[in-house]
Image 1 (tube, rainbow, N blue to C red):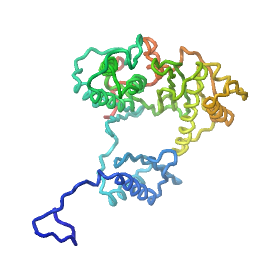
Image 2 (image 1 turned 90 degrees about the vertical axis):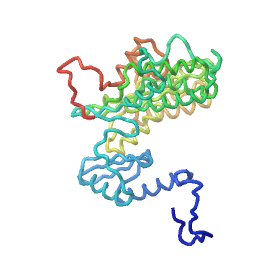
Image 3 (image 1 turned 180 degrees about the vertical axis):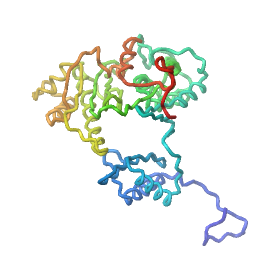
Image 4 (image 1 turned 180 degrees about the horizontal axis):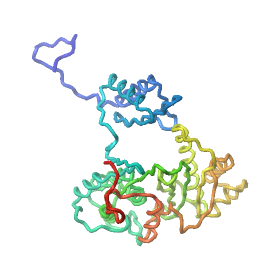
Length: 397
């Protein structure tokens, strides 16, 4: 190390001690984002106002998109010359490292074929099982026991809260490609400040469930249509501690699952209809955002989006302009859902509860119903034995 110019030291053998690195400064990440954004904008890219990490560039003959996560970038498009020019400009400005075709990104393993694109986290699951000594554990069929409900006062408190928080945090990252554990991880995350032994045992059960098929992940068929559809559901007053309901929704672009959520509602619903309507309002806001994002990707929405709910009362509330209950929070949700339905963005439809795909995001299910919902999510295990053909796979990993 050499002292900077202009700094006079009493002895020439002295150096400066760095007390705080650049990456530790609060403004470092923001300044980096500003620099990268200005660089991409100068190249003709447009930053999406719906997702600030997405940059797109549209020309008469090509479309290029850049997805940014801090200093990791995914560059894609239908014009190799434009992609090459963007790489050269970024390398000149920042000295980037080009790792070629997308195969591994932030723990996500991507495999491609002529028919599908698969995204999973097999290595991450394998390391997780090894760290907790469950590599040889007997797998279970569901991520959560459906005969009992977790409560803050059910069993004695767990003594190592930090270890529990670390385990749940690692499971949260797995929900990026494993929507089947979304509800279980959400329940475990609600007691990070005071976990019990039952909560820790439930977290270990999730690991045993992952042991059953660690390579399961999302699948995106290349031949699927680009029609968006959604499902919404709620489990009324299911939390034994607060009596709040659980909202769940999922959206498919063609046959591919692109968005899902399982979350405890912020207010107490006084009826199942109210709980279903609050869940519907959250799903409508999500579909509005998805429509904006698809527009940025040159996928316009030309017809009302089918939005399925299994509660007739919630659909009647959306269709009836007269408020029957003048509670403030339900009134706001009524405006949100009804305005989107009247504008033609969504088309609210009713269907049978036994076909409800979003059930897996609202409650712990028995093995039979769980497998039924699981099969509808379109998840795929790349490493599972194939029983037809010669057993070979055309995926490129």
